Every structure is written in structure tokens, then in C-alpha cells.
Image (tube, rainbow, N blue to C red; front, side, top):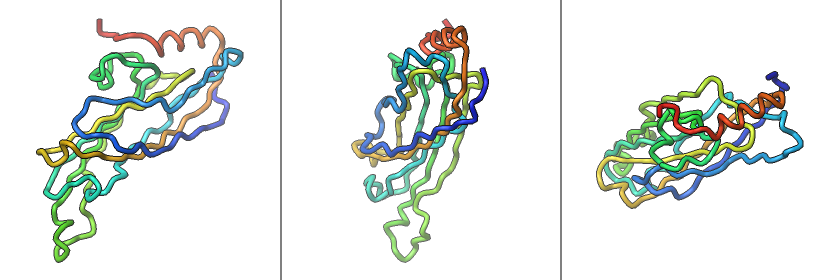
Length: 184
């Protein structure tokens, strides 16, 4: 395995995701060229953040919001497993927490910062290779019934580094990217 010094960036906005649902996934990279099995990618960085403002999410009281994102190399049958590090297919995890203030609706006390990012945690498996597919899975939860039937939009940006692999490495990484739970 060696780097080609080429990079690729995947970036988009995902719209209208409903709060308090199980992880939903979307394929963001598909590469199927059977004549080029020596091409693969490694995630260099992985960022996600809220795109919606609190007014568009219908939040009118103090709320805590939690967003979970994960990267996977194949379908994961159980949505809960997108947050399970023992599954070979899931290679990255990110959790972002926000505090939303009702002060936004009180113009005299408006500070200009109705949404405060409280915490961001990112975990990436160190030895992952993406050869054919990359999915992003996501969910959002919030405190109280305020966000129960509301929607959020989020942005993501993922930087990938292209690498060259041998045919033998290609076989191993292909099996690993479709492998099952390591803990069983």
C-alpha cells in the first residue's frame, strides 16, 4: 500500500432528516471498476455539523441536541450497529452536541449565538481502506417533545487520500470491508 499523493473531497448537505429516528444511511461514494482493483482510499478527516437554524427546526425553548454520524463501507443490517465499533464495516464515528437557547426569540436579550456547540468527538479506525463504497449514517435526538416531529439538515465534508494497493491487498480489504461483527 502506498499513497498516490492525490486527494478527493466529498461534501454535501443532507436535508429533512427527522429527529428521534434510528440511524439512516446514505451512500456517498460508489466505485466499481473491476479493471482497476489497485485503487483505494483512506479517510483523512471527517466533519459534520448542523446546517439548520433553530427557527427552521421549530425549537422555541432551551433544548439539547445530539447528532451521531458514522462512516461505513457496506450496508449494516441493524441501524444500532452503525454505532458499534466491533463491526468491520463501520470505520468512523462522530458525535456532535448542541445547546439551543430560547433567548433567540427574545430580541432584547439576543446574543447572536442561539446555538452553541457543546462537544464534538470523532473516532476513526486507523487501518481502514475504502475500495468500493462509503456510506454516511446519521441520527439526531433532542430533549423534550419540541423536536419530536421536526426535521434537521446537516453538512458533511470528508477528505480522502487515494492509495495504490496490490491485488492481494485488494482481496483482503474487500473481504474486511464487507466483514461482520468482530465480537461474535
